Image (cartoon, rainbow over all chains, first blue to last red; front, side, top):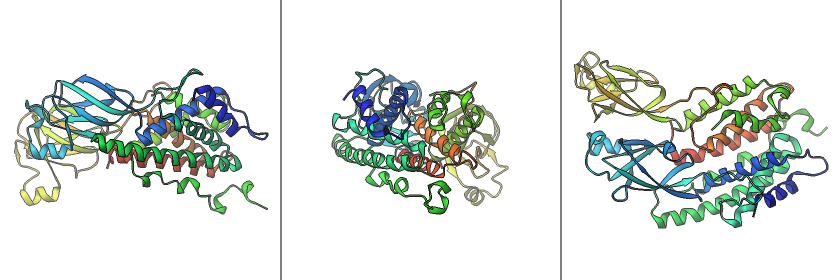
Length: 226
Length: 195
């Protein structure tokens, strides 16, 4: 599904007689935000890169600006995930160790290695490239493309408050249900691939806070029935 | 990422097209909201983890952040300890000198103390959760994960619409806060907690 098709799908969701109209730049921005959030929630878009590492640590965002989490790191052989505390316990001299690295530890975007590593091959979950021209196609699986129109619809309707916001809730509910479904599939595949980071469990997709109505007394006066 | 782009993306949500037709807020106010939320996100998840390297000869050392994760003296890992443990180990722990073997963070945020206090100069590395300088219209660049831009979009919208007065939209603020909370919850499963 192309950006042009998705833009039309968003217009269908948000425009009616009483709604404001939205510019194509606003709609494209909302679709790109949707694709970014979808990739973040599902880890469905992955890339592999190589880099040379001179120190026992490196900022992954300096190697790849679209980095989200590590999936598989390889030096001379596959590196096993660990923590800095485990490095300290196993070998207090790891900061200057000349042995080939066997483990890595991730903290934020920092990647630490417990030994020397000259060339790093790392597979990581990535943020998607932005959709810009009308023929651009999202990088997420095709059967989930229309969910991006749902997210964009929600993101455009949310700031309108009142009934527009209420209308948008069905879209964010659908988007998150689809993300949860794909995250489950990616989890199963990642376990089979022996990846180091998995998409979140279903509890992370708890939308109860988004779906609940504000208590009557906290709602603006004009939204309350006479 | 550019804080200016995030704020520009928010104008339609605030019924404006540029900063000059923002009716109820100033541009500086929006940067303030964004800066507040960026600091809150950095306190929740380690988006600005870093390593501070330098030479020191003092026991007490500071770092630009909220919590230390690990430390090394002359490339030898130091063991973390509490003041209670150091007192049990050595009643004169705060005046003992030698080669540092442990570090404690109990003195306060952004500060660690080495034990024993170094008897000479050495190379100290501190792995820590850092913080970012507040973005301004003159210096809008933020180096962080791409998803942080979406977190900041919701966070800034939340604070703008939580402000009481003509702009007050508690339902919008609550929904934006809920969306931010959901993204932070997932971020914690990926990157851990910054506490």
